[in-house]
Length: 318
Length: 187
Image (cartoon, rainbow over all chains, first blue to last red; front, top):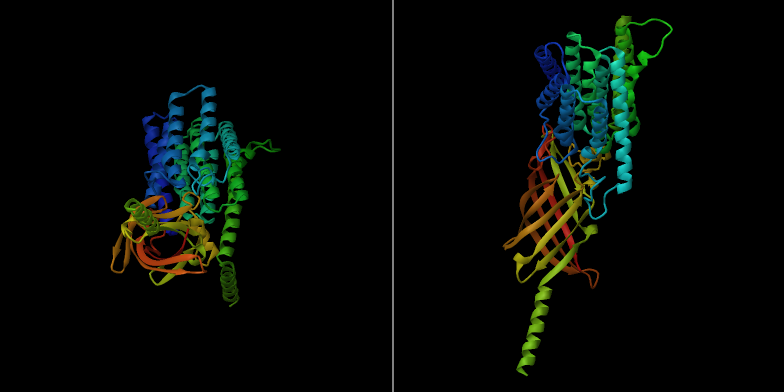
């Protein structure tokens, strides 16, 4: 496990660099930022944060993590930047989103034992039919959640809610993957979450509209999906927490449900984000407990906690 | 008569040549690949690969024509701690889902005083690096009767960072000490 202080520094670097680049982008775009500002901010922040931890894509690309950092993330950053700059028709946006969604899982799993005959002829774990069924299912799931989140973002009227919900989910996914036997894979999620939070902070500062902030959703949801995919297929992340974490940002949309009382935009956003944070927190806590139990830490921790409370009680009594 | 003698000599000669280069399959039950790595600079963690396979060809007349190939399944790494083994199989270390096999293929074999000096390519974690080691032994026995065996032992040191395995360098050593002992059964 990496030093928590180093991780904290990396997240802080990602957040600050992203906020700074976002501010520069807002300034140069004359207060009408587009997808490229979000891509520039998140990309700069995430990669600087990762570099702080010594994580960078390696060439030639051979492993899942390097395909995520060297192919998937740059591609989605470019797609969002181009989408914002060129303003393509709706059918092209949806087509591009579907194609990108279908491509992520095959890229992440490229050349692995699931799809390649690495241990002899016909040794791939998935048959061609099963492979395409799984890839189609994963791609459609990503497309569905991505589309729902973009819709939620546009309808919410908030530039903060959905990207921040994604940042919370990515941070939770990173921690969960780290606690599931793949420390360096989960670590990727933390600077990415910090970078999205930095871009959100700038958008909030400049009072960006919800439409512009939708460009941060694509990068966030693909990042979340990818971190969970490497944890699931290359680490020991279980399916249940992966699904919960992947779907958790959708809870931000619940705040848009009709309520018997009036609730302002900020309160709706706060309620939506609180829901996301609760679910993500529960998943991380449950995984941490399982990790501690596997490592034989639970009894020691309980003993320490009991000692702490016993000392505290005796001191307050005296 | 002379032609007959020549023919006999050629046939015998061929027979000798054929016997000179003999192929052996690795006997998994009597072979092992063990390693040790320093933990936090104060003690050693020992491990092994439980799934080892391969074959070698020995040419007694011309040792440089001999060859050795060895494969290990990274999934079979065993340090007597299942949780640690699972972590070792993850992309933090071996990345068994991406690189399921660790292999060595010799490129040259040279007879030296102490045994055979074998040079070849070691492929680990998707990286191939040259490796040279001294193979000692070469004693042959017949066990059980009719089954010809020959055994070798070697040890060498490699740097895991040379193979892109540079996670947790602050508390796990870079040098990995490897000891291999194997028996081959003549095919």
